[in-house]
Length: 462
Image 1 (cartoon, helix red, strand yellow):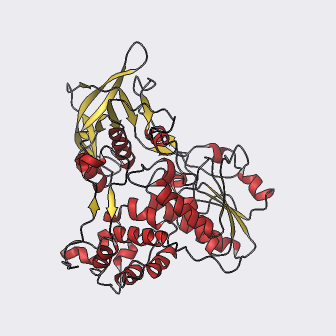
Image 2 (cartoon, helix red, strand yellow):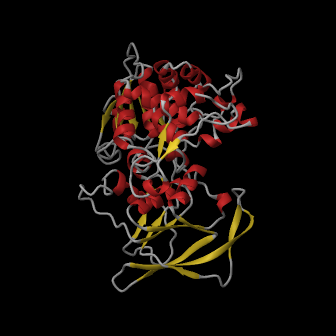
Image 3 (tube, one colour):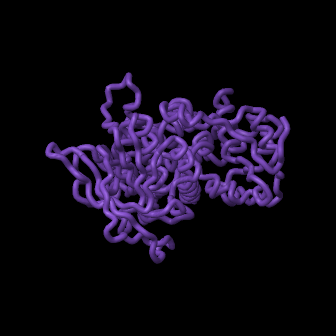
């Protein structure tokens, strides 16, 4: 296969009009020939900046070098030393602002398509039945991990490789956390990818107990004092949705993005063979501009709705990945930018019958450095919708912190933990991911899980 070293090998995707009507994966990924050709573009830097851009510090030149020679198993084992979820990361990580942003090849051409190569490697390894390498001996110490999302799976996997006896406690009936209930099937297939990645973590010796709500069924203090665990990692995420507080938010047809996506993903409401109800709506407004907003909007579109994204800043300030915005536009989603809802209109039966909005303009920068949106007087208008999905971010559920003695939280109800180690104010208890930072990306949660695993190992090795 001939390759222009300055241009990345194109990746195949479903056509927009076709994929907008199904829940099959949008990106089809590389085949082996394409992956090897793209891998050949890597110049194998002696001081690889891409590794510095990766929150879990994968040896990127190492795995790409193996892949260049067609050595899939060797490439996979290089990745699995650093990442428990390569098939996930290859699909949902914002590589364009992390590893690929620092790729030297990108200075005079396209950066190497690191994410797509990671995805190919993980998928090819799964299809070949290749598993990560287990610890040869156990060290006799037990660690409890709360939450089976990306932070919890990463922490558990890293500790298992070090010989710890690890048990994950998951509140829902299915493991995977946000990977299972938050990210749509068309971006992250559940059976093929998420379930397989969870099984890989279990193959390291990790046990997973589902339907266990920590703080209700059992507390952290009981895990430490009565159940014989030597340390606990809290990776419970941030699943408590935020709302605007505007009139009409309690109407029938107003959802949080969390509820909407959970119904569609975990409960398979998008599948006609399942009895799970979901109010698809015919005209849907999604309020927000992050990746979750894009996921909710693209899900509503596939359920048959005309969809608007309503966001109070400009396109340059959209926090969603460029790729997700691009895909949403291709599929026909309408972007109402510099627009803010002021009221949800409700009919006599309590159902949504529209949403009043006002136009915005950007003023002076706020504390985040972004220009603050300011209302434009007299610019009110009504958006004709019957369903509103609020995607304004989330915060941690306070159940765990409120039932644990000596665990400090901040004013946002997030657990206070050291960034480098995950150490909290309570001895033997570590935390990371969205439970500490508030809602963020999968890869940042994984980075926090990895840091905490290192911190727990140092703590229990004293």
